[in-house]
Length: 148
Image (cartoon, helix red, strand yellow):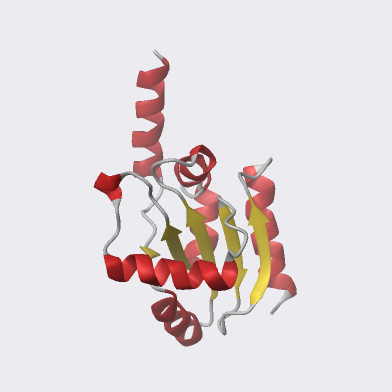
């Protein structure tokens, strides 16, 4: 029964919220952010091994309030570090992710979500899965508002 409820939740949340465009190249994100006057939300995840990472993407990043903030104020980047051989990234993508991690995630925290300004400067970061997804979204909004 839990499985069916989980599947129904994923299906309804997918249809209830427009899909977000998660990019994978910080250089492109910086250009978009400068052009569109937006912030960058950089998320470090382990899509096939990190439970809190998976939960963040399935439960928080699909919330209507998050989608609204993301569409209005953010350029989204996911730096993924899968472990399973079948999920390995291309060498070029792995190199891009490693470069971003060397700059913004030197301690190797997963999940780590970093808010950057349009010049790539860290505005704020959040470690792990948020205790309150709603407060996490509000914190993103407030941080952006405080830095405008």
